[in-house]
Amino acid sequence: MKKVFIFSLLFALTACAYVDPSITDQTTIYYDSPVRRSTLQVSVHPKGKQYRPLTAYFHPFVIQQHNSDSEYLSDSFAAIFHGAWTEERLFPILEFKPGTRYLGLNSALDRARRRGADLLILGVVPYFYAGHTVDDTAITIQINIYSTGNGNLLWTMMQSGRIEDKLPDDYIYFRNEYRLSEGPFNKIIRSMAKDMALPLKAWLPDPDTDFQFANNTRDVQANLVGTTQAPTAMANEDKTMEQELPAETVNKQKIDGNSTSSEVKGVNLDIQFAFDKATINQKSYHLLDALGEALNSSDLKGKNIIIGGHTDAKGDNAYNLALSKKRAEAVKVYLVNKWGIAPDLIEAVGYGKSRPLNEGKTPEDQQKNRRVEIRLVD
Image (cartoon, rainbow, N blue to C red; front, side):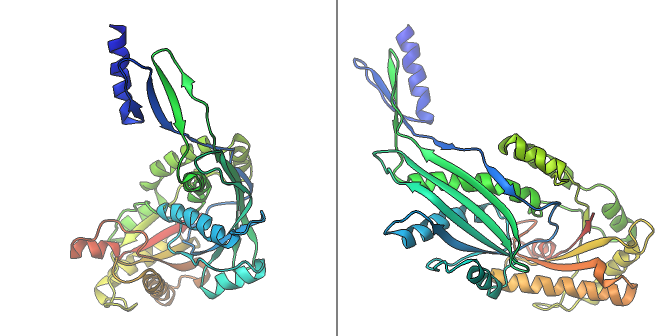
């Protein structure tokens, strides 16, 4: 009876591992060797939260360890990391150009500026060892993020990861054997990239923040002054970040005032524009007047806001990003000229098609995605 139970258990394990069953010999269960990661070290980070979207240029990695395949590995390692961060939707545009040699920080910053990026992401690999399927594989990655505007270093994060050749676990009726991955660097780098995305996701605007739509002054003011649906999602993200980051990093962020629990207040407006232009349709003037009246109220007068333009999914990323920013700037001009809002209180940014509310299968859904978002900056 005991053997029947054991074999039933072994077959149940086939969902997560490969089982080589045997009636007469010891049954072997094969597992893929797991990725082991060190504690993520965040030694440099900005204070406060970033309220506007940032575009980034992702440079090929700098391989500090001498190797005859440095150029190939530089592109390959960076491509894996870039792919993982693209999946996280951290930036509206995250451009990666393989084959670019590193000629120094100033050269990399100039290259990022020429592409119109707000940030330069530069990865450094001080150590790696390729064991493939016969030995351990390990890599250490440091990610530095610079502002292209002034060249300041905003973030420095470092982590090590490895896949080890693990000895079998031998039991009476079965044994666990561990297989080394055929693509170990892909598994390790992706895992580390996901870890390093956590602090950035807490710093950058949440791509899934869902503000309410408003069509009158009272609703606009209520959404900008009162609570929105964002805190619940952000609170869950805060807990995840604190679980993943080392205690000393989380505590330092709280001491510096960089806690991720700040509530983001905002509202969506269904502003319509001329096709493929930044010209505001007259039927949307009443929404902008409602916004202007709300911003001149006692609760909001003198407050800083960010106007974010959004587009539907038609067109490429760069084009939509530029169009959405022009539309946000058109809204700013309206508020300044008609409602006397100080221009230095308003920042106009473009999100392009990176933050859709829905899949855009119908004209109505596409119009919702072509919204104008107003965020209050604390």
